[in-house]
Structure formats: C-alpha cells, structure tokens
Image (cartoon, rainbow, N blue to C red):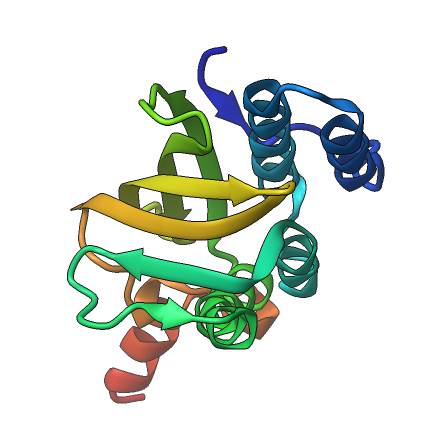
Length: 192
C-alpha cells in the first residue's frame, strides 16, 4: 500500500463497523491488526476537521483502549488512561477546528504505513499541512507506533517530529467579511 490521503467522505459511517467485523472474524492477529490500523487511519483521514472536531473524538473513543498509554519524544511523563489522552487530543483538535472553520486555514493530512518488527504493533508516517489564506504553509511530519490488543490501541508513541515552514500567524487567517487579518491590521495602522 502506498501513500494514503483523505478519501471522499462518502460512506464514512461504515469505516468503524468494517474494522470491528474484521477483528472479530479473524483468527490471525497480524491481518486483523493491519485491517484495524488501515480502518482507523482511513477514519482519521475521512473526518473533516473544518466541520467538526467531535468526529475525531468519536474515532478515538471507538479505537482506543480504556488503559491507553501515550508517549511522544520530548514528553517527560506518559499520558495514561483514555480520559487523559482524550483531553490532550481535544486540546489539539479544538483550536485546529476553529482555525479551519472560522479562520479559513486549509488542513490536509496524509499517512503512509511503515514496516515494523512486532506482530502486535503498527507504524505509520504522518504529514499534517496547514495553509493560511495568504498562501503561507506549515507542514508537520511525525511517525507513530501503535500497539494493539483485542482490536483497540493499547499504546501509541509519536516520534521523529519535524516542522517545515514557520507557524501560521494572525495575518494568515480570514476574518468575517472575507478580509484577512493582515489586511485589517494594515488598514487600521494607516491614518485615515
């Protein structure tokens, strides 16, 4: 399988059901885990952050174990338990949703599977690109390792983070009325 990117939103409700059926009908854990990984990543790609952040939280609720253990390079302590990881995820998704819905920031995400050594884990490479209304962009890449148990993610580790381009600024957002924040700032700074 090659690079995957956000598929059409047609048929989204079936993604979670298909993963659940593939896990419960499979005797071999490696194919079931691979199917669950593909379905989880497909659901992430299909969820439209500009429309809602709640859909991403529903995906998390469905695919992640109650005793999830989440880590990332640079994080001193792991985040333990579904409620704590969900709160961290919401803290990332809510501003992203606001920037996309209200600020006009274009958000795109891609993933590619990576080869791992253990039968109970999967690895993926991710790219998140944010493009402001001015054309400025910021791309963040990272890899994730997920360990699975009974069709649920038991642990997730994010590593190899890179950022290409600077962060988007206030001037890269669109305000109501179609003006960019940069145009408003320039207009207000000039004496009338």
